[in-house]
Amino acid sequence: MRGERGAGTILMFGLCALIAIIGIGTTALGVLFDAREKAATAAEAAALAAAVATYPPAGSEAPDDLAAEFASRNGTRLVSCWCPVDPTLRSRVVAVTVAMRANVPLFGEVLVGKTARAEFEPRAWLGR
Image (cartoon, rainbow, N blue to C red; front, side):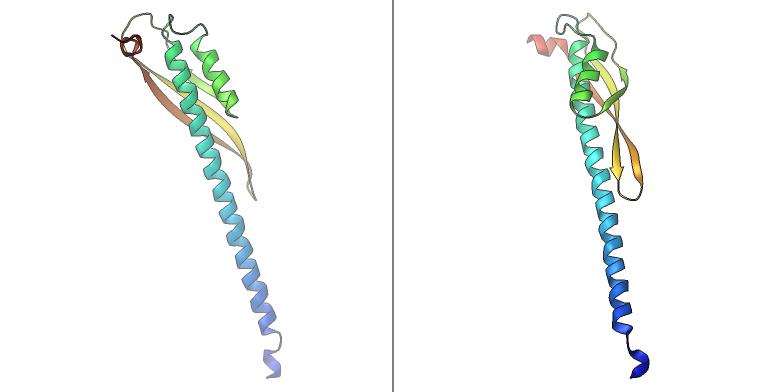
């Protein structure tokens, strides 16, 4: 019996370490998932705003500026905006890419990026 003394303590330390590792890993995944969803939301909002602004009668701001503003409002920064202005009534698609930094436990700061596309149809917007 004397040789087994303290075995329970070592087992408990090991179990506590395992629980801590699982907890930190779960937290890291949660932070990354949250950052990814926030970046996706920001990219979609920026793309929708920029899509309408590509039709000059609909918006007063440049599509790039509007996309940057909406990205910033959602805690991200605009990386790229493919938003060609078109005065015709043809439908158009814009693509916006945003990025944000996430502080992930044990990994430090991680850059998370997302791209979103939005289609705008001036005819439908005008009710034609």
